[in-house]
Amino acid sequence: MTSIAPAPSKASAASDPLESASVRLRINGTLHSAELDTRTTLLDALREHLHLTGAKKGCDHGQCGACTVLVNGRRINACLTLAVMHTDDDIVTIEGLGTPEALHPLQAAFIRHDGFQCGYCTSGQICSAVGMLAEAKAGWPSHATAEVSAARIELTDAEIRERMSGNICRCAAYPNIVAAIREVASGEGA
Picture 1 (spheres, helix red, strand yellow):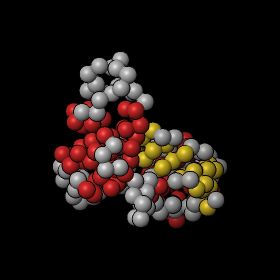
Picture 2 (cartoon, rainbow, N blue to C red):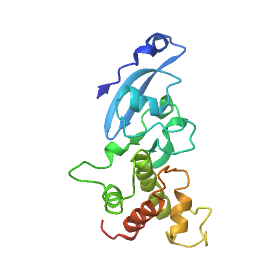
Picture 3 (spheres, rainbow, N blue to C red):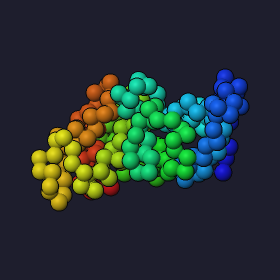
Picture 4 (cartoon, helix red, strand yellow):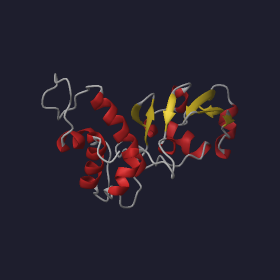
C-alpha cells in the first residue's frame, strides 16, 4: 500500500476534519491511502496526487471523455466524480490495462489502425472502448441497437460510434478508432 501525498496548495484544507477525509483507492491493483480534501475529483487524485497522468484533463466538464477510467468495470468520467466516493472501489486507468511489452488488445489495435493522432484523447478512448465492449457483451443496448431484446448485440460501426459518442477526438481519427474497436470486438488480431 502506498500513501498519497497531499497537494501542497491543499495542505491546510486537508487537515480540516470538515473538509478532509481518509480515502482508500485501489488503482490498477494497488491500494493507496490518503487524507484528501473532500472536493478532490478522482481525476485530480490520480493525476496530482498519484502522478498517474494517463487519464487526461480535457474539458473538466464530462463532455470530452479524455479522463475516462474504469470503476468496478464500468467506464466513468473521472473529472465528474469525487475521490471520496470510490473508497475500496476497483479503479483501472490506462496504466493498468497493459504494458509496453504486453499491450492490451485495444492498445495494440489502436496502433495497428492508427487510431490516434495527437494522442491526447487516446487513453480515454481505450478505457471507454474496454468498458463499452463489456457492456455490449453483457447485452446492454444502446440508442443505436436495432433489436434491444436480441440475445447478442451486433457491434456494427453505427453501434460502436453511438457507444463511443462520449469520447471526443479533436483530430477526428474516428474511422480508425472504430476500425480498432471492431477488430478487437470480432476477435481478429487479438
